[in-house]
Length: 109
Picture 1: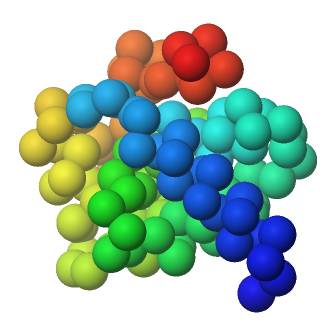
Picture 2 (picture 1 turned 180 degrees about the vertical axis):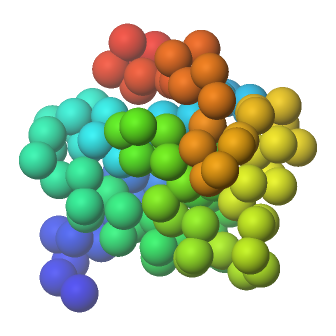
């Protein structure tokens, strides 16, 4: 992996660590906040590599609230369980009341 990519991953992790308990954000919202609007997929790669870095990756979903990263968590429903433990309702792999629990780093930070 290129050194600049690893630096970007660290910036992503810094933002993800600020997502409040019981809230979620999207890959695209993080990318936009970091000034890399078209890099949502790279944010996803960062989330895939975040395990073990004390990063609450379960709080990052796609722009529609779908748990698209769930297959990168151990067990079948760990991402959903972690969100539900924080009070986020998930049905059929989708965050319910997405607009209510959505945290936009561009507005909140």
